[in-house]
Image 1 (cartoon, rainbow, N blue to C red):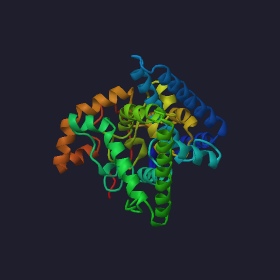
Image 2: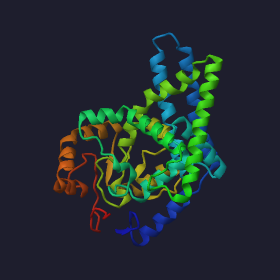
Image 3: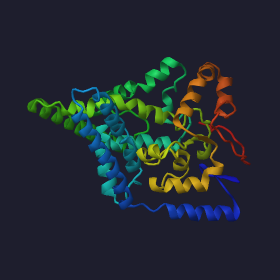
Image 4: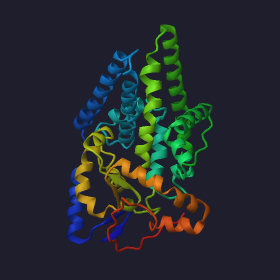
Length: 344
């Protein structure tokens, strides 16, 4: 094998065959995207009906929780649409990204800038924006992170700051900053109109079908997202610095196949419906794989001592970056090229 670009590739005839298979998988489809979206929205409608029907009964909390999980996992179509791989049509991608981003207080232009920087500098502590905040290294920090409250606090504060015209993030190009400001103002204006309409109508639907469920569901999204890169080596090769979590068919459907995360990072132009086939092509060379999200969380919790030590010790941090300390779920494959952390 040899290292090419950001992923580990086969060589010779195997490389040519692999590239041809992946190219065939890269075709985007409105039909498949709309079918997946219809399933997600249909489930949301059913869970919303369950919340309304369960009002005043012991079934209200389970109904709110189910509805909240489906709501926050609108992050999956937002993510796919930000890549413009959810659909073939650009207008569908952009429209779905806006609708899903509004539910999550995550405007699509801002998210796209953040997320594309994440792809360019995955697991690079100096340049990956999500690594500016330390990963959980204790039970207290883990529970705080998983609660989802830091996410909502950051989203509200950042959106308000952007709406005031203050866009200072280094991953947002100067020419894009006016768009980020307009986007934040439009989003906050929509929220104000919804709040005013709810007050005038004396309706609690906004509270019970969006705000409360989103708060209850966010911890499940935090747990899911922690599995994507936590404890993966801080190296540039995408088949080593991202984790694929096999999980269940239900979870893969809910998350639009994003549990195939190493495959997505190695080939981000592949649409969500092609990722299971891409997994068959790439599985043997994916260094970090897990059987379930529960297994990853147990591994994260079990690493607290090592992570805290690494945060205090530069030597220990270098050892963890090399992948020597780490994952019980890792299935490392021989790689002929040197395995070194990316330099800032």
